[in-house]
Amino acid sequence: MNTMRYLNDWGLIRMTYREAYDEGRKRIISDEADIECAIILEYVMGTDRNDLFAHPERELIKEEEEKFFSLIKRRNSGEPVQYITGKTFFYGLEFFCDPAVLIPRFDTEVLVEEIIKNAPKDAKLLDLCTGSGCIALSVKHERNDLCVFASDISKAALATAKKNKENLSLDVTFIESDMFENIDEKFDVIVSNPPYIPKEVIEGLDEKVKKFEPYNALCGGEDGLNYYRIIADKAKGYLNADASLMMEIGFDQGESVSNLLRENGYERINVIKDLNGLDRVVTAVLKG
Image (cartoon, rainbow, N blue to C red; front, side):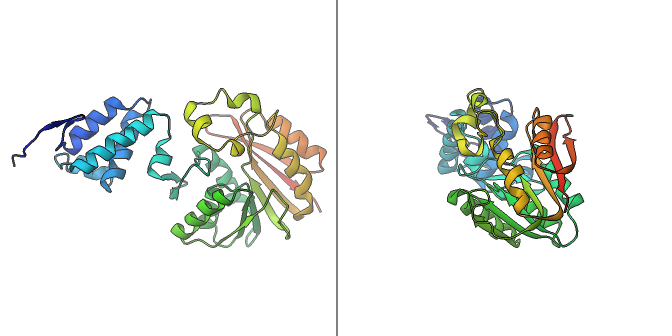
């Protein structure tokens, strides 16, 4: 079918899927231009990647084309594609994601797997610094027997986490709390992916991280260990006898965090590596 075409600032008004994708990936300044362009195009068109391949001749209307290229401009400003589309995937689930929370990373799935494998049956679990709720909700999705609580100091982060809870229809209790301040129960397992990047390292992070992701969810103080110190000390008052502590750590923090736990009376301390062979999770037990 012949379609009338005329030029505007971007090129052809009636661009096809294929043309929009090819033009978009040329414009995106990113090492992952191909996949990011596809994600943005799918978002604009309200479709999935299969549609792009099955119907490359489908045409965009003017509003879709304008939105597509405006979002590419946002991506080129450094804004992460997850914030642009408002979604990301973690442990096989789709999560709503906005600038109130850190974007869930694949590395954190190592912590989730440890929790799923090792949490006792019917255990009560607390996820500190929950952010988007990705850890607590992923664990609950896989281990429905667990009674899961999750806390964060940020009202905005909790709003995002609660939206994910509703979207996923999972039973997790969210609590607004500065670490243990508003926690009044004891748990069989406490987990956390706290802020752990040293202050001086923040400036050297990728632009899309340091400019767009929440600083307070990244910075762990001068040496990156502030929150580990709090957890190692305070968690003892909120753990049942023989309960477990599991935390994500930076690639070079295994020894430092292990020492903090040892100094605070924890036993059976273990550092788990990620798929790249880097320290990623530390686990410990508080003996009764």
